[in-house]
Image 1 (cartoon, rainbow, N blue to C red):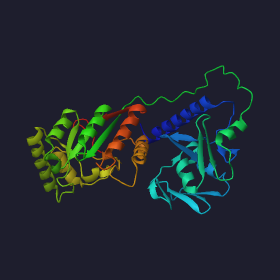
Image 2: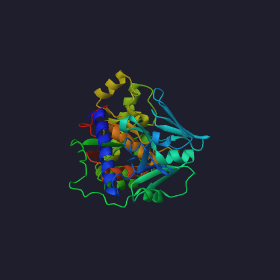
Image 3: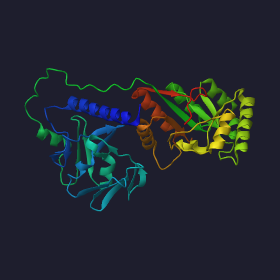
Length: 377
């Protein structure tokens, strides 16, 4: 499935699910569900709100309905600025990073959805601008407001409700939700070294029936025979990295290092591997020249690249932020090779991704890399 087809399918699914949600919670026909201060937002018919990974997203034009809010977007430069008085939040829509004076730079994705309208995460933008974001779960409604109003969102909705019952439905109003593709996409979980707590990682993988690949340095092979034996016995794969986690000085030294590590692996676990990756997973970038690539292939080694860096070793982000970003990137990626750096957030992020895929995703298979079936990047 191409990126364009995937994008169309995702957009259609979001629209259909939103329609189901709105129909199921409406207490009367044509009841507004989007409010700015004490007024229903007039743009609702064209641009509704969306829930993406449990977060509410609103069109930027809705913020302009608040007196004093300005929105400026430069599509050529990939910049978006939303300001209110002396407060603001800016976005780099290409790199998916935002900036505020309070929090500095952080990952925050925007989306182009209905009619090419830019959607932003409601709670984060309101917090940056000093506005208030409210949700009425009972009525399926949202509101952004400044400090000029005091009534609650439920009180506001009550003033819009009519006393007449909606007309009886003669047909099932639930729209058809697009069927997800029947093809199954492989998701490769790629650990850059042996995790600090391998037992916990293996337990999480086993709980969700997932397989992974662990790329080991020479140091990982010393003193960890029990953990590695359990890892292989559980159906996970092992690969090799450079001995010290740094690029080798030459092709000859690189290949010699891989053979040396394979011998260590065989002495410890009676197995060898032909899977190999460059330091930090390469993230889809070319990191060896053509001659080295040919030499590796002729010696039987399969060079494996990651396509999504999880960033689980970065202290600047919370596990929830990291998980949301990874899942968002997965929706748009044709090739899913996730690199875990084995940091402070590894366990929490891994469990978040596994739980979401187990509960919500269809058409994904979490599997280990295999020399005969894994396609080189």
